[in-house]
Length: 188
Length: 311
Image (cartoon, rainbow over all chains, first blue to last red; front, side, top):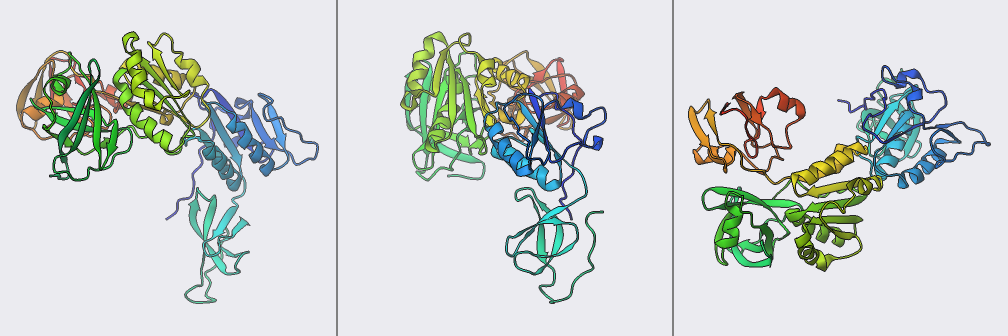
């Protein structure tokens, strides 16, 4: 059983009044777009260029804006959405944790599931939540990890919480201490 | 006095709130608590002559009872005329449990309410709840020239700068209103089909997703009479011009499920074997309509002289 999210390549929603594409990197791969579509179909986009000289203007109108980090982008996205009117569609491209962070900002702004579209790219990296101590372990690429919070060995379940933006990690040797299953690579 | 399906209610009070608008207060016949209902819910009353009409609950309190406001309609099948002319305090009425196909969306950042005429009834219920929860809202009620005062008075105990009563649609700029709504707004409309279609079309043109647009339909009854053939039961039924297909089926003693009786819920949908339905519901998709294999007998009729159903 898995509830692994499935991502559909992006295309601008023809019903929308306006579109905003956000990405956690620069130079988005063409695979993120549906056949017949490309980056140029999204004239207003926000991306991340980690440089001290980056100075975005989130209300500056259509065009490309650069941000210093994903937290920088997400916090200005909150302000932008708070000032938006109905008819906007939001698109997010990037790592799985990033696109679901964007989803959270969209949901908090009152956007419904039809109003934002996500596409996770790059090497699969999981954000894992320990069910025992609630610690979030970022950057997980294997089925077994040591929880940074409580130190137990967590088995990473194939269960993703869209609410918490994290995969479920459960102590895998609780019944038989020390008996660990074989470790597998999740990033393949 | 209550089973799974029906409530036995008694008229505890009735008054004319304006010419042609009667407020009816119903309580449980045995004095028990009534099931609670969220704003936007309706009940279906069984009235003499096998007429079953759905009415929105203007207020619903398990202890105090249910309140309806019914407009007298001379063109209707007689339900509203009965409520206005015959229904008296102490009369017993059978009703369904409350059903809600027009609920407020819990995640909405703002609620935009657009009522037309007697479509004010769910708006009154919404207002009470939105006030209680301090939710962000805006109400636009459209009234005929002669009724502006009536609707202002109806909404008066809840008046405020967020409530606007417009005399007719010409003074009301729907597109400008919808264009100015913040992200996360849900719009709720109840009133004449033309108004609700207008709200849906204007919202869609501005890029509103369908899930943020809510409408409450009253069944548009009446039309040309036609012959209905129930293929499996082997029954021919003449559907009169002032009768719905569903009522005709029920009058013939055939049991078929139904819920809202207003073309919204989809419970009564039936398979079509032959003939061309005239779709009046808001449940079937365009694809389902053009396939012509399904019909909603509560509101839809027939374009062909005979309609054959698999029933």
